[in-house]
Image 1 (cartoon, one colour):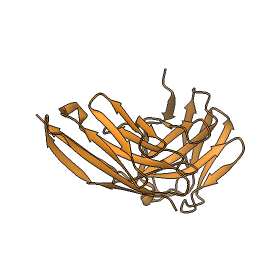
Image 2 (cartoon, helix red, strand yellow):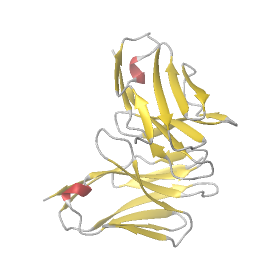
Image 3 (spheres, chains in turn yellow, orange):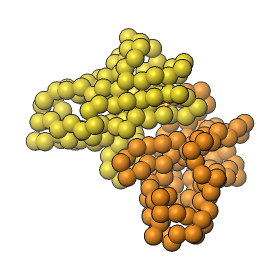
Length: 107
Length: 112
């Protein structure tokens, strides 16, 4: 059975303080590892898809990387508007999500 | 234009009632999903459906049933609502084959 574990559960950063979120996974036949952002009261919003170990993708202050067992979402010099829950998922017959990391960036 | 839209956004109902949540996507996708997000924010797949097959998460009670009148719509019917059904329900869609999913804004269901 596909499993996705995210850590930490919650993270508080000062504005400008870089950090990384972890997503470890087990899946039979990876069809994609996905990162989403979810703001309170809204649906998850797509950030990245990674398909193979060694792949990296970037968008503004975010960079996602993938190995055979885990993925990292690196946040460089975060701003308060980056505060959200970040969700990692792997694709079986549907996206199977981890429990998310709740990020709070304070000014 | 909203890609995936759900109605209603909020639904408050009494135990034992039957209710439906509607979902429509205008992306031309061939696969639609229903997810349940509990109070701890864990997003769990309930159903995956395209015109070829319906895949049901085995943990979903049979009081829940998806109904698809056409490729662009997947409605969720819930019979005999229970307190534990209170959650936020998200509809999503994607192209078949491991592509990214687009989510609706969610329906917050409260059973009293």
